[in-house]
Image (cartoon, rainbow, N blue to C red; front, side, top):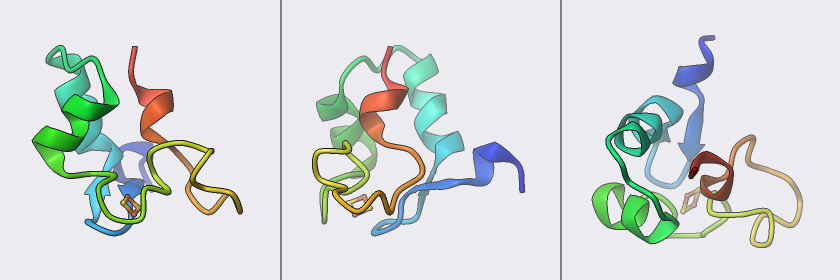
Length: 66
Ligand code: FES
């Protein structure tokens, strides 16, 4: 599997590729990622390790912003 095919947000099936695309376009905060993609707006486990207490998500939005 290509790393870009990794699903970041399992609730809404949003891939790493989709998130990286908007980060490259200048999206600079978790709030903006959420408003553009809705990623991280359901269970929040993909937002940060703080919400992902059992380490169920490989990547979190907080690690993808610059
Ligand atoms: S995995 Fe992203 S909101 Fe649940």
